[in-house]
Length: 326
Ligand SMILES: *Cc1c(COP(=O)(O)O)cnc(C)c1O
Image (tube, helix red, strand yellow):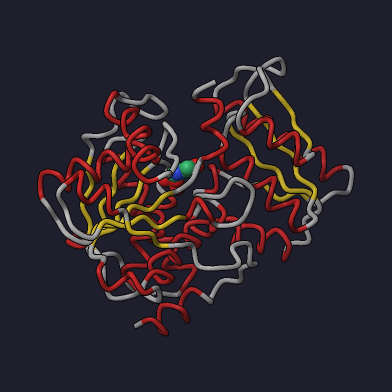
């Protein structure tokens, strides 16, 4: 199954940005706290690019496409503290690619968190003012037109890297995990469901491995029906890109909508408290938007169900932490 999964994932070209398997660590003090056995964290926040974390795996596929298309500039867009923007910038630096970040915030915004990292990375930044995402996309489309007219070849990272190609990056996570020593104790993976790229990828990877894990998706952004529809669309297109005739079996996954609070980037008292718990008990930093809600969801479910063999996928966001507590 492992060889088959690896063969499937090699059907699309990728560049190597994560040069090693991300660590799997056991959390003994959290085990004692929650009364559940064998709790692990897969440290995708330590993947070796910039502040680390989610979207670096997606960028391995997206930048491979950019390079294959001979792009001479990569454009990423998002809010000024977007983790994607910083990771795209860091990855472009590593590959020697020019990078432009488009932020829908005012230029005068205070420099904090990821913005400081973007400044150190030296990439070009355009602030278009407080605008909705649709207007930001419109701005990017016009920028692309202008660069093309001037003879350039831009590559746009769309939808926060949540595209079928980008989601293939995250299908590597379970495939990597089954080669790591701790995997024999792990039965359940807990992942955040934001735009859905990470969850879609992990679930797809679990499928091509023959379902070694049950995947728990903690929604942090959209409602379960909206997220489920996004995932189905992603799987359909991932299957096409990888020439697979299979869709994930829904019995190998559970969606949890109770930890989202009032939506994206609005933390809850429990998720805020979780940041202190994991820092003070294990020396691991979570942030407010994704990882603390996911950890709190896992902790609450383990406290209630005492499932052994849980593993949190730590999706990073370290840079944004410094804007959240500033
Ligand atoms: C973007 C992001 C996620 C969510 O990933 P999606 O693919 O959008 O669901 C999770 N964690 C961090 C730190 C992120 O930056």
